[in-house]
Length: 371
Image 1 (tube, rainbow, N blue to C red):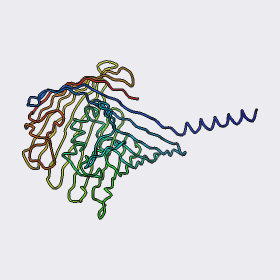
Image 2 (image 1 turned 90 degrees about the vertical axis):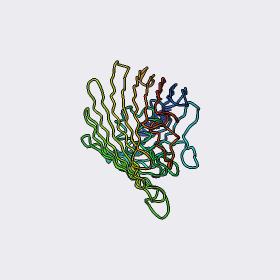
Image 3 (image 1 turned 90 degrees about the horizontal axis):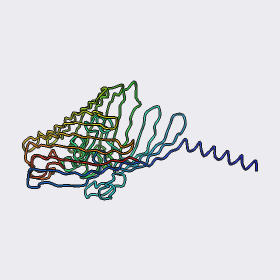
Image 4 (image 1 turned 180 degrees about the vertical axis):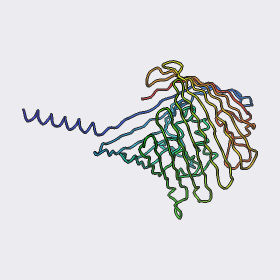
């Protein structure tokens, strides 16, 4: 009996040690809002239920194993959750297909040297310049920083990088990313995605670099990227900077992101500024302005402005209710949905201003829960 008790105690100790060294977490965000949009054109008003307003709804798994000596193995699997319809994953590619883990699918190592991850993952600008986004990456489906700054509008950007035909460049498949540790607040990242095409390593490839500084109240980041198309006949370059400064009663944020194609010389730039003000222990008000411009290619130059006012009230550490108002303007009447070759101006207020309009108002109320 004593031997049995001793064996059980040893087994329990081993299980406790293994549990401390290895962990797997299931996590997610479920966010839904009721939105009413008023347009001044023939489309008129519309009311919708939309997922992922303050943060993109998602679900995922992440795990880490302590290998000893400060070295850890880790993985991440994350997919979009369209909780307004119950669907999972978003369509990508041409013809479109749905990926279960469309947001992230990586495995890697981390330690005193930093971290290395391999698989499908965000471009470097999201984890650096994106942290200074004036809205905190809210309204990702219509945010100029996400749609145009992060090149997530496939109808405009098309087939650049390692995402395959018809995809945006926000995330890259077949990629390897290195992020350094912080040295007195400074750090950097390097990333390469392989197009996996024959007869040329540059075809459908992505190369990126970022630098960042985060110490005390100041955070600054910059990112640069080069993406080739699958035939290695055109190049899309992107660069951006972001600044965040924390004051006693507010957080000020600003970003400038631009990208340009070699063949058409089309350039799209996004300038955004904003402020977060905690007006009560559980409530924060955000005000943000974005100016988006497109110029240099076919057709007349055009621009758009978005004005945002967001109130967030934290019911708990995991649950938040919110209300938001957005005003969007375009310099030219929206004549059609943007495509890669159309001569009309690109709709720089995509998802807000409808065809036949040049301005719109959006009102949203919703709830977000994190688990």
